Amino acid sequence: MSASKSSRRKPGRPKETDSTDLRDRILDAAELEFADHGYSGARMRDIAARAGVNPALIGYYNGSKGELFEEVIRRKGARIAAARHANLDALLARTPAPRVREIVRAYLQPQWDMKESGPLGAAFVRLQARLHAEPEARALRLRREIYDPTAKRYITVLAAALPHLSLEEVSLRMAFLVGTYLFMLNDLGRLSDLSDGQVTTLEKEALLDHLQRFLAAGLRAE
Amino acid sequence: MSASKSSRRKPGRPKETDSTDLRDRILDAAELEFADHGYSGARMRDIAARAGVNPALIGYYNGSKGELFEEVIRRKGARIAAARHANLDALLARTPAPRVREIVRAYLQPQWDMKESGPLGAAFVRLQARLHAEPEARALRLRREIYDPTAKRYITVLAAALPHLSLEEVSLRMAFLVGTYLFMLNDLGRLSDLSDGQVTTLEKEALLDHLQRFLAAGLRAE
DNA sequence: GTCCTAATTAGACACCTGTTTAATTATTTG
DNA sequence: CAAATAATTAAACAGGTGTCTAATTAGGAC
Image (cartoon, rainbow over all chains, first blue to last red; front, side, top):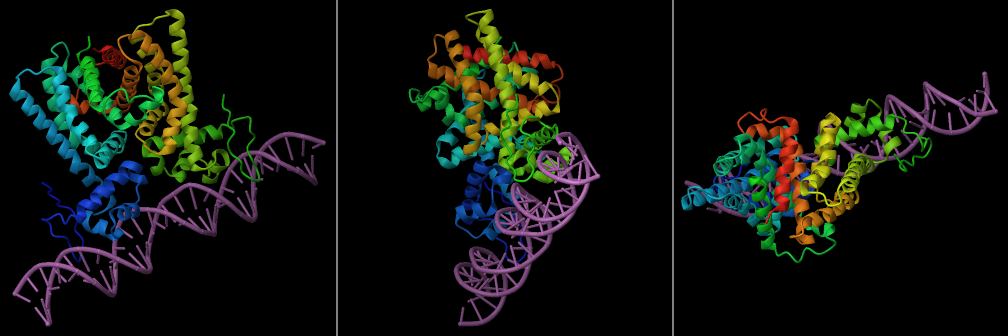
């Protein structure tokens, strides 16, 4: 799984094969810090403190701050992309011409599950939202590399289910979809402000259903 | 318009009433820098250089970095909120029970116009997208202060147009709407990646129509 | 003109940044 | 056991950070 061709320190170098479990602790800590403070706002010393290691160990295991950031994004980004592909495979195997709402579900589910998996998963959703608001070249490249192949495939399948729309229109609506779910998953806790305190009426699972219906209807529009 | 109760330097203090035009130049420069690099990533020296002023003048006119940031957000955020209110006023005066798509349009138009107004307007959209991905307490407070009153009013009007939905459900869909347009306006340039190069088929004005239809259909769903 | 105050500047200040170094401890290898 | 290499550390490094200070210039009031 984890290729980890990184880290080329001089004297002692970690064994390229095993993942030392300290490396993952550092990546987890970095994920939380980057999610909370962004790339520039995150401090290497805080990451080290959170992982309970010496600051120099970050460089030893994960290279520079920039390389650390990319690795954090790639690690879980790849996991999400893979799950989306698998979901689409399963869906297409089940029905050759799936409905829009099923396609939407296949796309949303992995991200939703990750968010619900615990604080680390929720942090990664936050981090993704940040990455998508980042106009910097490096961030843009990362987004393309990780998410575009999957998105393109979904666009193709969606286009088949939406024969009244051109490919450009479907691409546009796919972008809408990404924006909606990213923002929604990230900003969900704030909803209570807008509906004056009570969102407790809606169960968590109902939220995903709601989002799915909203998006499916939007995609089908006109 | 500009209250500007800020800046309490010791020896010389800018006249509280007029806006010196240098102050605005600094705010504009800060807006661009914050939009491109985020709060932590933006450097006071770069802002000063971009405005063509001495770094100390930033503090002289706009206080600390944090205060500068808040002022940048408030300045145009208030403008957008006001335009949304005015649009809704006009719409309600025209028809007591407006359609969903008209409400959506009234909400989207100001942001769209700002984006199209030039590089500064586009920068502010980027900055807003960043602000909405920021979990920090100060950013959250700013968002609430600036955008929530308007959003609440739109939720009320939307709820009247969507009698089959509870207030919680309408609030939730309003959050979807915000996520969609923020992401879409911000990330629009990247769409060409997904549809393999050509989005030129869709005219700019058609994009807003498309977004409006997508959102209206999503809001009406079920 | 002089005086007073606002506007502006260069430079320093204290602190924080990511990263490196050289030394030390732990682990594996023979 | 020794020897070699990997893992880990404390400390320092060079450069950057926001902000302040003291001095200088500009502009009006009288």
